[in-house]
Length: 148
Image (cartoon, rainbow, N blue to C red):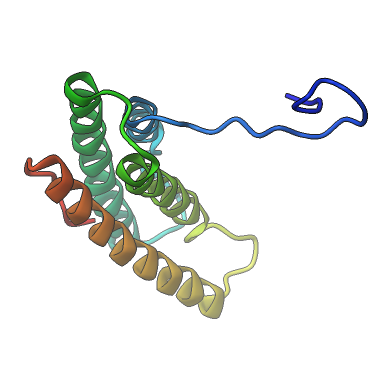
């Protein structure tokens, strides 16, 4: 959407963000639905198994937290930014992890250093996702699949 907030003068970009717990829940459910299946012709089975294990856990976490967030919104309303922001961050991290997993084991020229860097980044993001999953579970006071 473009245009000034007061409707006059120069054009500016007005960002529209997800602004409720229901939005955050739906984002998580969308991410869970769109997480890729692990498929790499050239990757060893151990890499594919690790990718699939991470993806399956991300799906479970996003699905559980997403349904929990939507149910919470149904009981409590839209919530505050402090309420729903951790859920949006979890969705964003899950999307980023899934994207990085798509890059692992796929290159025109094998590069073990690049693969190691990608896995290191994935491991850091998975740890952050675990922390957010635990936090959202505590917020919802419901068990959420935690380990990515």
